[in-house]
Amino acid sequence: MFTTRLNLIYLALLITALLTLFLAPQNKPVSSTFAEDEYHSAIWPEESPAVYARFLNTPDKPPSVHAGSVTQLDNGDVLAVWFAGSREGAADVAIYSRRYRADINKWTPPIVITDRERTARELGRYIRKLGNPVIYTDAQGGVWLYYVTVSVGGWAGSSITVKYSDNGGRRWSPARRLITSPFMNLSTLVKGSPVRMEDGQLVLPVYHEMITKFGELLHFDQQGQLLYKTRMTQDPEALQPWLVPTSSNSGQAFYRRAGNAPPRVLINETSNGGGNWSSLRATEEANPGAAVSVIRTHTGKMLMAYNPTSGNRNQLALASSTDGKHWQHLRTLESGEGDNEFSYPYLARGNAGDYHLIYTWNRRLMRYMRFNDAWLEAEQ
Amino acid sequence: MSDSFWVWTHLAFFLLLGRIWTGRALHFDLPPGGVASGLLIIGALSMLEVQHIDLSGWLLAHAGTLSVATLLMLALGVIPGLGVSVSISGLERGIAHMVWLGLGIMLFPSALGYGSYDFYVLGYGAGMAWIALGLSILAWALKQRVLAIWLALSVLTWRLQLAESPNLWDYLLDPWIMIASAFWLIRQLFPKRKTRATEQQA
Image (cartoon, rainbow over all chains, first blue to last red; front, side):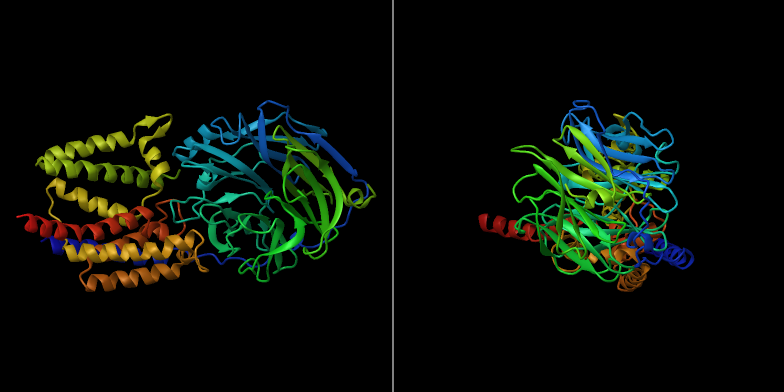
């Protein structure tokens, strides 16, 4: 009797599974072509200002800030995000945002986009801490906010959570967790900017840091659904990848060094749209084990913001390169001493041929800069 | 959280605590009605909110999303408590645990960065689902019903996206079933040793 019933149950199960496989839409192909504007030069408008800089938050409100990210919206507004709280990893840490309104040429006051409790409610699970927000405007003007959440353990236990806004960051969708690892979805973090593919898909460079440290590329469809992922490094000593397309199929990725890797910025390359990656190697540029940010400039070169020392984060500089391997120092943005920390730079291209840069200033302030090629190339 | 995943998390909570409860209830020879009452209470507990999060959400945060394999084994532990007999031989269970342990040993280290190939990426395509269904039919033909149901149910729930993941591996396996399988297989060795030791003492 039991066997007969079980046979029937299995038969029904099998037929339903077969039907869903036959009838459901087939998997979307993963794009392997970078969007043209990700690697082509643009015309520099002469009327843009050369440089502009300011702090985005008030000291001690809250006392500890870190990991800024910035994007320019289609209407010219600039949206900056960072995390802040009593200290990194504290329960009161929230994701803050501040908007530059292009129509009135003013910054609006900082607001909280989300915090631990709100994210926990939206995900329906306990969240212990959050951090590392990354913000990005897609080809349709939609704004994506990726950030890490931790339920168990330290940052190595992170997973990535995403929110979406269809009205320029004024209203956000409920948080959605990305599942990127079979091991209890532990240890996927984000720091670098997404890159647009030709058909509107996005790729997001992420990294693992539990037990081994390596980079991965997450492939999303136009609706932000995860399609696939690609391992970017085999060597377990690289973190926080930044992807820079150099043609429709080729690109370079730059990494913060970790573990026993030499104290240099690390690099590797793809020639099939991120599908496969070469072995890591060290550039000539120093890296103290701190995040770097690299983008393609409007003149076709690469621009890197980084800490140009091997021991600490008390200097921050900009350098440029034509091939990603040999770099020329352009400007020193910060030069401090001892425990000063100017870190976690995040570069983004502006709509008008300019650049946006945000970075942590001594863990107390978020520093924002906007500049153009003329300022970069002028004598200091 | 989607409605379907809400069901998944509450089912996981219900089956996990239900399995523990059923084990204790059977130990004390509780009748099926008593076991069912306890299960009802566990179902209600699952919805209890603590700091705006269901108890099942607290479990989920610490244990991760449970796979079909784990849910299936938990269900097989709960069902006998309701007076329904489930006859699965030790050999059939053993083969299932060996498969789960073997797949876990292959999958989890590669996902954590060991080795040059990440087996997890295979789970994004429909190709692996077809293979899984083929293996399910084969397992049924070989009278390995646990494996057959596990494979078919995993493909079905993956295709219907009942959990959060777009990857079939997350429906097939989780670290808990691998650990449980390792313990189950190791435990098969100990009763024999214990018996021998008892015989020697006698």
